[in-house]
Amino acid sequence: MQKKILLLGSGELGKEFVIAAQRIGQYVIAVDSYANAPAMQVAHEFEIINMLDGAELDRIVAKHNPDFIVPEIEAIRTERFYDYEKKGITVVPSAKAANFTMNRKAIRDLAAKDLGLRTANYRYATTQEELEKAVAEVGIPCVVKPLMSSSGKGQSTIKTHEDITKAWNYAVEGSRGDIVEVIVEAFVNFNSEITLLTVTQNNHPTLFCAPIGHRQERGDYQESWQPANVSQKDILEAQDMARKVTEALGGAGLFGVEFFLTDEGVYFSELSPRPHDTGMVTLAKTQNFNEFELHLRAILSIPIAEITQEKIGASVVILATENSNNPTYEGIEKVASLSKTDFRIFGKPTSRPYRRMGVVLVNDSLDTPIEEIVEKAKKTATLVKVNP
Image 1: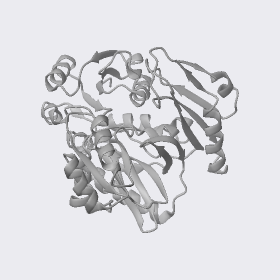
Image 2: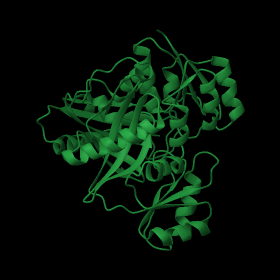
Image 3: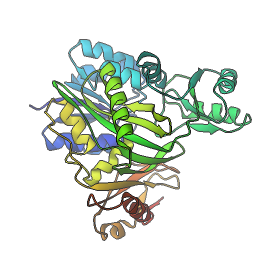
Image 4: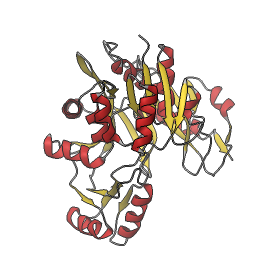
């Protein structure tokens, strides 16, 4: 049953995926643009290439001839995936899903125009002049994001007309890939944000994890908790939207589908065709399977009978504050001494301000107020220091 998996992108999410794959006897080649990336440290083999170089991507696919190609990042020449699929390689969740969701334009148009899901009013811009026009049409305040980016890079909020130039420059700098284009979204007056981890299976029903609440700064998640406090009406609406969009994309695997919850109902926000950063809360043993195990089992067509909520939990990120080529950590012993608490250090070889270097995990029984767990996790995360 051993399959060969080519993992494109080797960050902390990829590392946990590799660990899950190793536990059930799979063979993984981890790929990234720099040496000693987290997933490379636990994979069988690794490759260092620029995944936006189509020829290089073709070369390593031909070299390793994998059964599965599993993308973990956005900056990949995803149009090549259709050719790999024709050659009999399974692209996860599918070539269409990977190609559409690596570009905010494709996934937003699919959701809003093709499927009719409720989304924020939006426009696109390829120049600063087009951005000014788009802002005038959607109104201020609004949010600007590169079409291709991750972890909030290049994302900002325009609050006055004077912010436009700065927002354009920041978006271009934070863009991944070679597409110089941004999406401009009208600001949604939301009460909360959730991620709905959605698992599509081959020949088995689509399953949903309990909703995950999260808080962001600079477009990147700071803490997440499960389950989020969501009404049954909103849960059903979010599940319906998630089912429609994942069915349209096809394939098997775990999707991280993000929503805004408002007084008017649920708004579709974004979608990732892979484990989601906010889903690291599942490493706190909140479920019978964490998100990485679910992704792997769905990919391999190992039936997932059910997803059960075992505990409540929270995750809080450990951020670097300085640049370093050899970061070290202090305070781990303090975290380890606390009950129902755990941590992960990702093993990134370098640090920079605000780079996510690890995560603190806390859980407790299902009858514990979620607010208490989140607060405990936040306080615990302050015990860990990343030193240059």
